[in-house]
Length: 139
Ligand SMILES: [Zn+2]
Image (cartoon, rainbow, N blue to C red; front, side, top):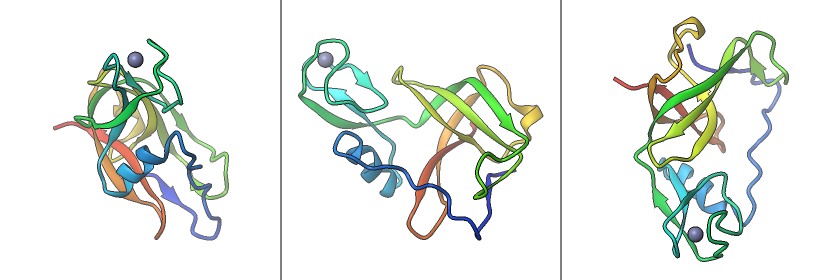
């Protein structure tokens, strides 16, 4: 089971701004990158202008392993937007780098999702213009 989209209703596109531009450029290359502080080495996601640990504004985009575990999830039985077709699952993934990321879990039935389940990133072209990072159960 994957997230299905209603082609008659465009889904909202990610909002790209200077703080998250590197993240979305990575996704466009089908590479998951997270913001990393050049001063203290802390990983940070969602991206922000300043390191939450040392307040440095010196940062770079570092590749993620793409691997993590499910920390929480919700399955939508009714779509909150006409562009999405329910049911689909939204997950909170704790990445190996220690940051958490909200996404969809695909290729799995909602009743098969488990707390702590290992997952890995996959990239899905949801429209001609939009690529999204999603997760699937790690083999
Ligand atoms: Zn820092």
